[in-house]
Amino acid sequence: MALMAFFGRKTVEAPPDIAAAALRSDRFRLEREGEWKRLEEIVSRMESGRLRKLSDEDVLALPALYRTAASSLAVARETTLDASTLAYLEGLVQRAWFQVYGPRTSFAGWLRRFLGGGWSASVRAIGPDLLIALAAMIAGTIVGWLLVSSDSQWFHALVPPGFAGERGPGASPETLRATLFGEQQGATGLSAFAAYLFSNNAQVAILAFALGFAFGVPSILLLIHNMALLGAMLWLYHGAGLTLDLVAWLSVHGTTELFAILLAGGAGIHIGRAMAFPGNRSIMAAAAESGRRAAQVMTGVVLMLIVAAFLEGFARQLIADTPGRLIVGTFMLIVWLTYFYAFGRRAESGES
Image 1 (cartoon, one colour):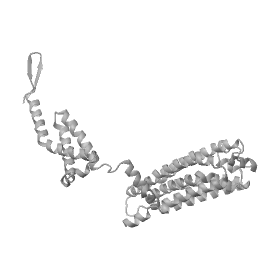
Image 2 (cartoon, one colour):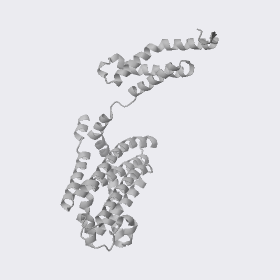
Image 3 (cartoon, one colour):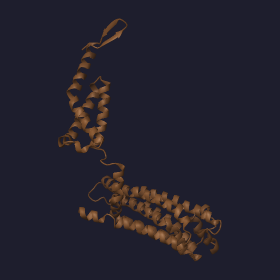
Image 4 (tube, rainbow, N blue to C red):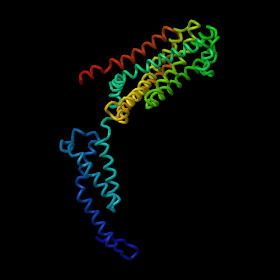
């Protein structure tokens, strides 16, 4: 085949080797074009959501047609001179890959499955690790209390001075009470302290999960260190007879926020424990398996921190009495416990 180009009045023939290559390219396309067109038709129907119109033969042929198109693309990249054919194959193979190997549901479908039982099932699966994280958090609170009660200077080491403000050893009960109920200008300082708590706890949640790869030890130490701050604050307000009031103030967003830290710490410990005791699996296989489950838990932790931010920004500001705050905090705790340990269990037992 001769390729003709016109330059003025002269006609130039392509060299024989280029003409032969062009001929082979045309034959290559013609021999496989039928399968490409069939694959494109199947993929187009799947992309448009018309799955019911696909026959059983088309569904069964999809993987084979995809592999054929992928093989054709590999050959075309090495031999063909037709740029349009190459571009067509690249687009077709990419579209087919998403239909063969890509996600089968939309984001809405994934979210429905996640909230409908996937998240809670993952939380229940790391139950032993949550118990370890809970023990570390309780121990940290006790350690913080004991340190400050033995030497009040520990309070300044555990609570950043910029956020403690007037809340420190020696503060009068009236000053501390005013920070809880907004009776003085100190309420603004407590709002800053609440914002610090949220920011700090969000960082702790992320770090507790990320440090789990070191066999979970850093995650446990981080939980203890973070909860020591809470122990110091409880000691301070207990001395003024305001323990219940502080617990109520914290519970509005704290039951959600601290629960999120518990889950994040448990997820990190879950990975570390799987790596330390992989059983018959390799360490990498154990880390990958536990990591997938822990990642699903952490996705939910992010949602919990968002909920905690709304509770801290609105509910805590609007409710100014201890009983009301306790009701909100207790209600949120019951919601989370019910969701994680009751919701979806019937579906699991039905499947088993």
